[in-house]
Length: 209
Image 1 (cartoon, rainbow, N blue to C red):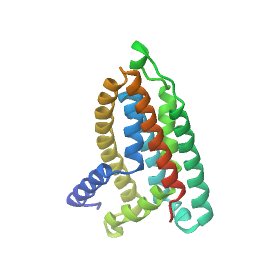
Image 2 (spheres, one colour):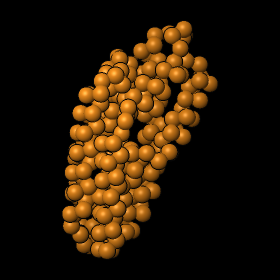
Image 3 (tube, helix red, strand yellow):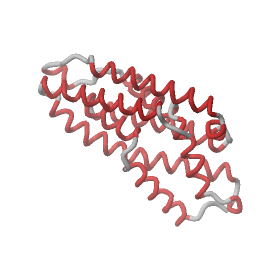
Image 4 (cartoon, rainbow, N blue to C red):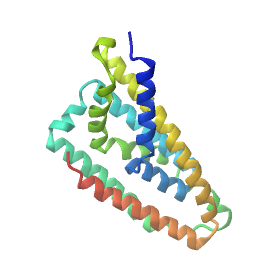
């Protein structure tokens, strides 16, 4: 016996609403899609969701509790994540301007964009702690193996995230395509992306358990 359908529907609806709420991941996708294009946003989304697989496994097998209980582990991971975001901000601020056809192509490789999403997600210990608090609320040991229920819930959360973030990527990428036809607009997009990355770095490094 597993989780009831109405409970899964409630969980999925809640996950979609959480995905729509302004947060570090959706702002990261928004910035990358606007700056690099729709494909970039989609690749970053896949990377972020790959990171969510790691967090789901961490919660399922108890590893997330380490970040909830160990101040050192929490601090080390968030400092690494903040440093990476600060580096992305620096790259955006110093990015050059592309003209003509070059402005229409992605400047970063698919692998780089995908890795950005993974690193952004797994270096945020608050995601694991959030999963540790959120997923078990919809699981019931009386309904079957708890580990399978948590994996199922984590998978549904990832599906909801892909739906929301992909929509954001397509919209932001389409708007970004228009802006990238202008050198001044490109410069503005780079500055906005850099500011978002820098703000996310500050938010992460000052995060408390």
